Length: 390
Length: 129
Image (cartoon, one colour):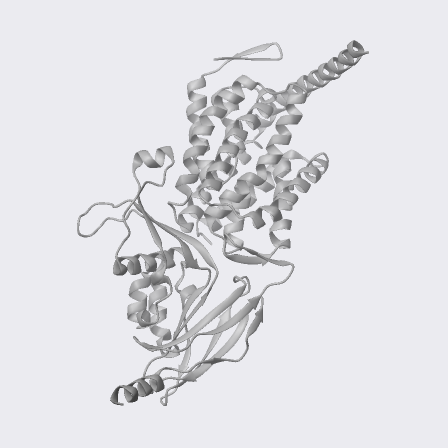
């Protein structure tokens, strides 16, 4: 009898929750409201069932041992969308966190805002841990898999992975929950355009064991928006299509593939992970390179000896490079690309200097002459073959 | 190493070429591009080869890198099939349209405009503005 009473009073103190709509079309705003025990701050944990990959390479000096751990943490179970809505009164507190810049720590932010009580879904994801070695990186292995971590360690590392995936405090913490003294609360939850389609779950949290029932909202995506499951982003497919078209045309004019412009533009314009962009742009240019090689080889305008010799050295480099992509952060990716493009720009300007143009004129004349010879030879050979067959 | 091309012989320092190619390949596969704009100067300036020999052969060299880089990125799961299906037709189409426009434009001005564009993009990436 006594026990039954306690259960009832506990159930009564759990926050209630309701939402004003049950579906969205490519994002939108929902209003969440309910009643929580009076006097408690209310947090909303919002997440989607869609999973994406997240990784973080830990090369920061360990404060206790003074050594760099060189460990790669990786998960395939990060929610594609994850946000904690905090009481609106914490706006100033959140402002301070934003001022910390890139060095902000998600775990500290959660603690400062008291939002660690709401943090539950990513704490349960499965995290793989690899000990990277210099040799391993050279031969392109992720390293030796390490034993599974304990629950607390998993939670700590999951917070770092959440930060690695979503990067900005803005993307993870939103101060819009208005809580009245009597415990009623309302909050506007904004699912951004470009978020993953599918079910979004909202849970109100007012204390460590005070979690409301989950409510779900479905986000629908329709043509021309498509969801990139590996990148965890949906976008209007005409955007990347037109951009690729323009860059490839421009690349042809410049005498280059265009991959080096596509990568930095894609990661700047859309919330796409840099490793996915790099890994998807490369096969895109593969076919135009192959058709170029085919056209040159038809007129015997390729030195196979030179191309293959340097090509073999490049195969070795191409084996190592992609491994390194996941070891760097997006901001490192962008800044290194900044320098690469400055070097390229310098090469471009150098090619417009009078000395280069004079030299280039001779070269171009020679190129034309040789090409003509090559084409004539190819035609003559074709004719000879035809005659021989006849 | 001696490279023979249409009756001409060129003596090149293949060790320098391979080290250069190796380093260019690491950087370019790491950042997701073929490496053409760097391999062409490597072959013309560092190895002293003429442009008519470099145009086709550099393409062959970077093809090796792009192929290996593609396979490795795929192996690590850094590939999005839908994203690929959006970009691929655009790249093919651009490959047809590009040469048509190229015939009617001064390559000198294209390079100047490209240079300015690259500087602007670079400064943006470096957080200057």
